[in-house]
Image 1 (cartoon, rainbow, N blue to C red):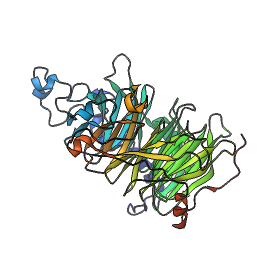
Image 2: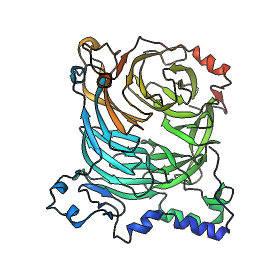
Image 3: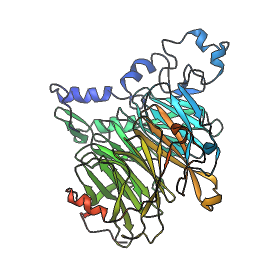
Image 4: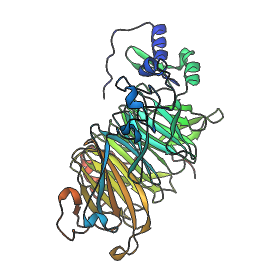
Length: 499
């Protein structure tokens, strides 16, 4: 992605002042400056829909006093104006707890779904409407709204929710145990105090475009991805500005800005005790090791390995830390995977999964399952076979292809169901898979670690949404095909750290 020209040059003082005026309440954006203060709006103000919380204008120009009145029967429901509807699948296979297939759909009237996150039975959905909806038991529970920037990424950390936006900001929200419906915005990354302090010093400015500079601790383009290292209390944000910012969760302080790639950062993931994985539109996937810097609490990330260097963009990443595996989806429809070699503190290429005709836009790994969503409108479900975790060891079996979306699948979330399947599965764990798409819907699937079987009775394709697959093991030799196309797999850039 090439940088866009933004007009004629401006004096440095005017440029710095313009940067300050672009910030929101915690770093103010233009729409919040225009509407938030003039209307008396604030953090956590409720909008026209009761139970729906916004960080900006609490009532739009279209709302009349009657619409907001408690005597209005349509206002009695907290989500009378909700654009979402839940459509369950009425079929024997959907009711079968052991079956793999479509359970239901959450459908919007309009707007694309860009991000998903789960915490137990709670589901968060982000879209281009700037709204984050909260679901419980596939029923709408609550919601909250940011005044600017479509929601491209969501991460849950205890009672806090982090959302990444098109406007380059990461917003922080807080939930309350006494009233789980309420979600209040408690911050924006970076904090206004830190931003103002850094903006005074000219050395804190970096060149981002030909005629523009900005403070280093702030993204100047869309935040495309987020990843949380819970043990370290660190949040990573990747952006189209080619950088990855490192944030300390406890005080929202930016510890480091990593110049990670030569093009947009599409995916970030963490694992294996202080390692960061990044994927970019420049066709590379990289491994970074987190080290302590000179200042107390400061970090420094060192590039230790380049996993991929290819012409196809890297579009998604997933880490299965317990299994010691890292998965990387690309725009050519392939999924490369690597095994973690603890003795050498690096990754060794394991093979390639081939199941999509178009770009793999999202990946999720849990238990022995790997789920991939693609621009070809399908999901592939893979099972990692048992082995010693070394190269040439365990392979993968394609269990099912889930079809039903009418647009590219942008995001995935997986949650393990309580209990285990019985019957032919012999006690296999089962999972609920949520897939968000540009067809304005989130589909809910039930998946187990057994191969999908042919339906017992005919049913409409969209009701079933599963194609039974012959078990398919991906050989490690397929990695060689990628090498013939000019890719460099597993290039080591430095001496591994000592154990």
